[in-house]
Image (cartoon, rainbow, N blue to C red; front, side, top):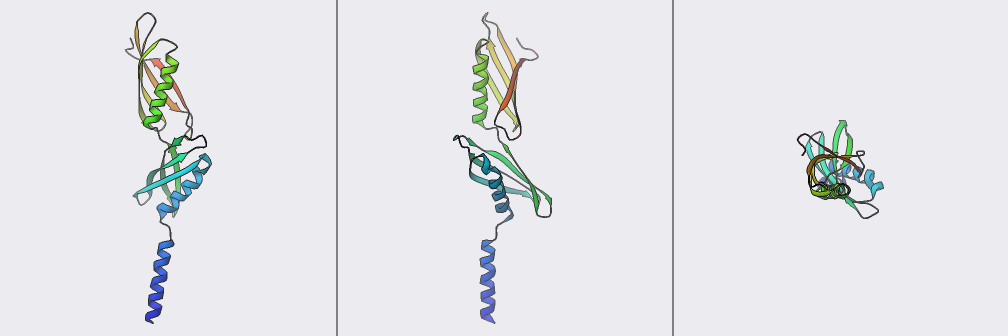
Length: 165
């Protein structure tokens, strides 16, 4: 009887070690979903409460670019979760967008400053200051919006705002 109890205990311990946690299962699902975008280097989810987890994935695409989408898992019913991963707007993306705007606006005059801030993972807002050929300085409000939730491309616009000089 003692041998049976020990064997049963060991079998349960081994089974416990081989079973994946809910977080691990969802991380693997995210890894599989994102595999088409490139090499998924890492996926990390942290439980927020019984029905929600948040985290990120690190991806290197086929061109060598790295991305870090923010991911979430929301329980829909039972053991089912809705998974969502959106590319995050990082400091590098902000800087790249500022450089793109600076390059394009340089065709209109001297670019004194471009400053964008992340609003969320779909949008950046800020301003640009330009000096025209006649020496007049103009401040324009700028917005960059992601083309689609999973896209890395942004449409941007800079237009004179209130109080522009």
